[in-house]
Amino acid sequence: MLDSSKQQTVKLDKKAALAKAEHYCAYQERSQQEIRNKLYEWGLWKNEVEEIISELIQTNFLNEERFTMAYVSGKFKIKKWGKMKIKQGLKLKGVTEKMILNALKTIDYDEYLETILVLANKKLPSIKEKDDYKRKFKLTSYLMGKGFESNLISEVLNANGLA
Image (cartoon, rainbow, N blue to C red; front, side, top):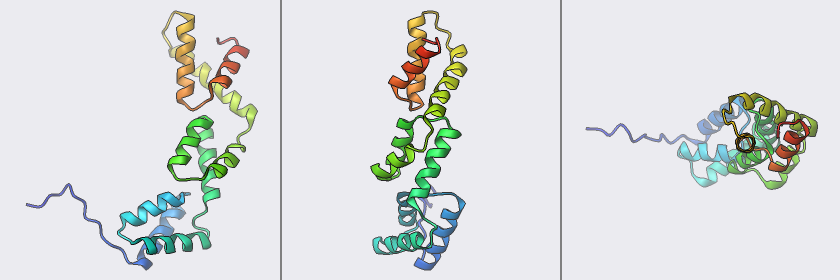
């Protein structure tokens, strides 16, 4: 009896892997680490993986800076994540600290504070706590979980009478 839980990795040759990787990159922006992991998953050797990554960079299928900008923009504008959560996500994808910091600078400060306020106003009615101190704590915890900095959360809540 065959064990179907073990997935067989089919080793792709370099040409097929490059074509598949180009398609994978064209579908959405990817980090170098994501591509590297995928190529290893497809059974390629280290030297082949690095050659393909180099080829993808030269043909502009893979651009770490473009990926980082798209990631920051999407996570902030669509998912409403704060800078701390975005930064953590990019670190997990193997993006350099310098590139992360440059991309985070593209987030408009006023829009960032406005997002904290919108999320706070949206969350507040669902917090059933009667005690004001506990309500504020729960709201702050929620916003910190979204990746916003505690000093900015306090600033926004106090300025808008939500504290």
